[in-house]
Length: 172
Image (cartoon, rainbow, N blue to C red; front, side):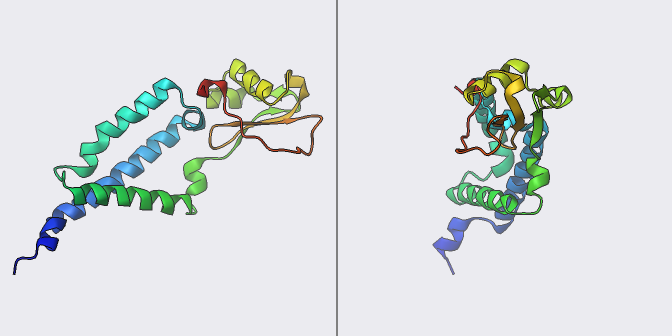
């Protein structure tokens, strides 16, 4: 019996391989982005944006393969959204996202952390100024958060009245 709805879904083997390919590419790219560091993810420059756009184009065929159908595209998009939601709520989240990194403690830069995370002193100083702090000596703590932003707690404000999320000037 001819059923147009079943035909629209396509070959079940192709659908299965599309789902597997999308999952493998998603997890591999997640690993690559994690290895590239927090700063890259949170403070996107035009070069970072271009790389991300080109990356998505490069892996498109690897994910969908020969299936250019509407169903294949929707399956890929649906699986990406499901994986994103599942991983953001899983116990793996901390290992995938990383942990905040202390950049300044009681006015003293943590040079090893700054080097490891690829944060230049000029960039750190710009973040301090955006938080209204002019000198390193006036900082109780500065932390590179998992989303790439730099949080600053001035020495004279042990209890911040208002929390602001300030992105680096590289983001403009």
